[in-house]
Length: 244
Length: 234
Image (cartoon, chains in turn yellow, red):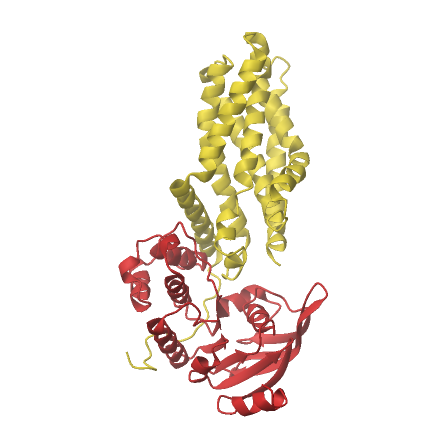
């Protein structure tokens, strides 16, 4: 190879590719995060064991009172989801930190909000996959007849998990540079999660025990409103969090 | 309005971290297609200047342009520049090919395995394209990071310690790539302690000391200017 041979294309500027570029960046983040998770199984294995442990402990503590189990089952499942979700969220940006920091993403041109949405979709996929195991286990342990209410339950799980992931993915980015991140993330996150946990727990309980007062729709509206408002706000201000 | 012949123009660029000024009032102008060595002792501010030029750090004070775009337009700057950091930004659990694919997709380009293969061939990693980067030596990681630079034909290429961790073949590869970049019309910034190896590649030297631009000169003039700057002790 002789020095100076023009093997590289001429210097140019690739301008923004608009929404196609946005979608590609989002897809790239989801693909990369899920591929790394599939190869390492770090988050999922820890989450699955922890969630199963939480449910087993609760089932032993509550005893064999079927009515009590059915009345509290919704809350217990969401306690399991919230605790294990924290494990997943605290590792949201772990692959970037191991690769040299968030700057590795920031040096690449393009809309920064695609990074947030990609990370959000990755967390959502992981948590929903976990719930596919968690709900049947809870059904067996707490003697809940879940198959009868599978469709509404899936809707509440989706809305609740989406809200959890929207806030969690955002706060995880805020906490990246905090030293005691494992301690700080739950402290920051749980107060912000109160509305979504309240809505998810009550909606799940009403589905399991029967919606006699017609209150379910109110809790669903709360979940939808929470998801929409916080999705817009978190997506909008995420670039400020990412920039140094 | 900046002339199209000017790749980088900086006026009074300063950057502070807490109470520490990493850069102070840097004025610099570099022509399009030129190559510049940023020289200076450890902690002089070379890497900070490269990060400002890459659009990942905003200057605390001062103004400037890169390829005609103001430094305040971070995304515009990132579209026109590419930064090679000392360690590179590589995901250990992905293969060499997947690392290239990720960067390419993140830059908005489509997936083109043939192009990635050609780049890996170019940087001498074709035989380990499907091996996870976690198993790579530091020299192989540096080669892959160099390969990432070839994904986009940007206006300004910023290289921080490009020779670090590389063997003789790898250093020759850097030489070739810099020559090719210049031939392609790219402006190249090198920040390196290996001044001897860098001098043969560059047109000008900017010597930075304690955050200030001490002097600029040609490669030939560097020993004399350096000696004079340090009062006969440099």
